Image 1 (cartoon, rainbow, N blue to C red):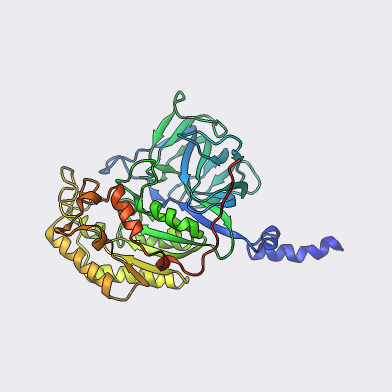
Image 2 (cartoon, helix red, strand yellow):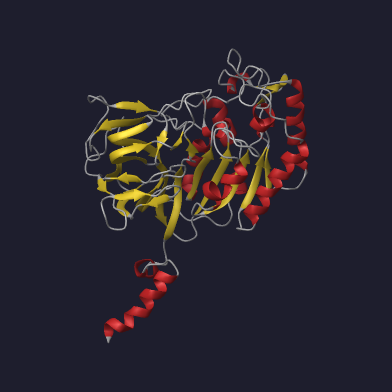
Length: 429
């Protein structure tokens, strides 16, 4: 009789996607603490190299990612979003990171998937690991190692990770360190790993940044967590608010670029991420400037009406989910990308459209708030250019100082959807 009395509850849990364990722990939930938006790997004739092998052959991929908010348990999300065949994961681990590929002694945890040490990531699908007990503080750096025992085509990645990853032969998911070993390759792309989530209180919240290479950190120092969303995470972590980076280099609002257009990926990369209550949108410069360049030589330039309509559709989609949207003005770019195949990226008529779009962002009332990035980083003497101290040198992307200026210019109350939870602290043991 006792077993029969448990059956209806178990069936209800299955029907509504909630396990009995989850139901018993209704005072906790999951929060996206780090993400990397997924892209389809492009062909070898594209303007930029992919920097990833075409196939992983019985190898281990080890990656480092810095969380924003910590928690007592973590889980990872893998992606095969653009794959055509299943990807077999033979083993996976997570650990606190030391320097390079090294892991913090005693912190290594074996990851499982539905209770099993191996799993397949279906074509077009994500795969979420089981939670693992690993107490991580805010802004902790984690190492995730994945062994692919079979020949696995690389179809899905995040091109510009701003962090070194290592590809080593055989199963080295439990190795204390793998860089410098024979046969080890390195890349700055992300492979398979799309998110890291932490256990948090139900009221926990995340801020998502939807953007292009300026958000993705194209000119930020490698391995220094120096992108402007990284700096913003440092400011918000003490308030218990996570920051996730949904930037893609070459990303556009209306058209596909080096990834799907923002309207197409908004649900997956932002709204579906657990805990997102606010999103900052910094997009449009590639929509304006790609047409006529080597990227899109025959593509028409969008109109102001098309761009503003695209923004309005994002806002409407977000508000259906109770998510606030902040619009950021497009930063100056006169003289962008000199000495490259894209040295025609800037033109006066393109800049005129940028200014028109910025005026609309500031005055239309479409957004819950406006972040005037243009005003914060432009050169007062030459307002069509970045301030030299903030310029990475390519006249398009801010350098580390410019990224810090963007993040520190934001009034934090604008980003808070409701009263934030206390920050999480952990003692490393």
